Length: 352
Image (cartoon, rainbow, N blue to C red):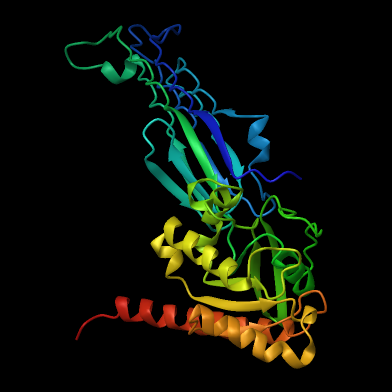
């Protein structure tokens, strides 16, 4: 399935039905009076985060969604039926904007979460509503109000705990293949990955996390070069970034240090929030370095980068060091969630 992370749709809520003017006409009941009923409200349009939807591609073929109009009022004080609401399934992680103003309307992150994006029109009133002591036979009614019409911009940010960051061919797809059931395309040329891939990493029973692989970032990505600008935003929801570096690039003029520095520079230009996220250095493809030189070679890279955070040496292709990395990630995420939970409890704790 083709991955689409942006779409524009039009939503149209149903108009409210019109009230009716009617009078009771029955044998032996003279001067029956007004009996025109109210109409029904128009249906509204909701976006619903749905677990089995993972892309916005369907909106390329169906982009207009309409709720039902409210039924008109009827005689004998019968109220018209409310128009059926329209529920539009979207993948979790969808952010909704008003296309004309750019205003953010909402963010759907949890499966089952609903967002009202177009409210149905209010029902019209029948002539019974206008009866009074001085107006026993009112002819007036009111029409239903129109439903809201909107053009929406949908933007999908994949929801993952861990994001993989690195130059093309750094081995990100190989790592996600080694540690999860995801099977992204792997080849020996740049930009093999053309859209984000998600994989679920099961560390132990009931212990798992989601890892995201995005297309490789190149110099100038923050200004739109390559595919980086389009997909860097997907890393903003992650709790941890793995900065992958090829320790022995094949037929490349760049050294591991210059490649890593370019990535760091692009991330800082893209977003301060993204640059401040926890980031671990993962030195990949150590199987391409003589075994007795691995430690010294990797230490030279760490020293040149002046890196102070965690460092892991792996071979994703041979699955060397990957298990230890996954356990370390799981422990970090659990600690992170525990700290967030404690902070929320302290915020909600009542003062003495």
